Amino acid sequence: MLRKKEDLFFLSVMIVTFMIGFDTTGLGVAIPDIAVRLGFGIKEGTWLSISYTAGFAAFLLPAGIITDKTGYRLTLLSSLSVFVLSSVYSTYCETLTEFTTIRLIQGISAAFLNTSAMALLNVLYPVGGPRNRAGAFKKWSMFLGLSFALGPILGSLIVSYLSWGWIMLINIPLSLVVLFPFVGSTAMETLKKGALGQVSLTSTLPATIILLSITMNPYFNQTFSGLGRHLFYTIIIACLIALGSLHLFSSKSFTRLPELKNGNFLISLLLPIFFSISYWSLFVTLPGYITVKFNYSPMMVMTSMLCLSIPLTLIPVFTLQDKLNAMSGFVFIALGLLALAYLFNTNVKHQGLLLDITLFIMGCGAAILNPIMARVVMDNVAPENSGLAAAITSTLRQMGFAAGVAFYSLMTDSSISNGLNISESHAFIASSILPLIALSICIYLNKRSQLLSKAH
Image (cartoon, rainbow, N blue to C red):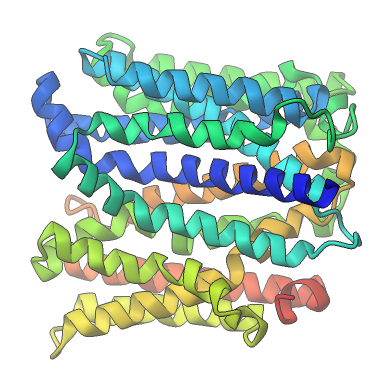
């Protein structure tokens, strides 16, 4: 009976993972319809996606602290309520500002959902426990890839045959499935007062404000005239001073966590960042590049992007991860980025086919690495510190995602480059170095049994 209950909890984690990923990508296809209804431009409508991601990334550390202090159960149930309510409310929004604000709130609740779900996963499959921890993270990776792959497809079908609002309302039945195993159960709770449970929530607020300010600054300047660049820099400098002061004078600052004093541990934190820059950020930047370079229709772009995401689901299903190791994953992504650089800088026969093959190879590399990148931090903390591990892992992934989008945007800005196609090629070549650096880090840290061995 207990095993069945644990399986239901695991299903809840997978559905939460799907909901967070689907709400990241699914609404993008509906932005043109929403823009027409609410009377703003499609370009301005991208803030509906950016604000969600901004709230998610900025509040992961506070979410981890609250998860460690209150336990995953209360955090998951309360954040799920806010997530669903904000989803429903968004269908009634009348202005871009109102919609952007509610999406920001939804992203914040998604941060709490993510840390509590990952904490639950860490408790269900502890390091050295009897259950297959590596297999659980492979399935988690599969659901994450499935959410990214199905987001645009389901979104397009919903917009075509129903209404864009159902992209948000689908969270209602999904949430009921998530809630089911929690009804009448108090089992499987995390231990209280984990590592982040000892940290002052106040110490994370400057970092949260910095991340939120950097991400949303263009929107604030566009919407609230008069804020100005000086105010932005003043806020950033003030928060940096606050971070330094808290580190020096507060023993409960998150910057003084024991784990952060380990040099090798700090170096290993680069791995999820590099992985997100060289892979996850392509989901935002690559569709526009493909449209311009290959003159693809939206449906063709979607098909190509499926080649990038579908291996995240296929590789675990066919257990191909057991035959390929992490070294293969790094090499696949590096070679894929070099192949993209070649395709975007030259004109060859069957470019479309070569593009799809290249993206599929990169997707296979990501399918191998994604569960390992999730575990690289999680495996280095005790179960009672699950909130810490989930917060750090997800924050790093989001930092890499944002850094990758910013990097590609800078490299391909026509105002500072000699040509669009050339700058894209340079960007892909530059980012291809990151998987190789990550591979070198793994070798340096001598973690072959965890990162370079077969992903059992």
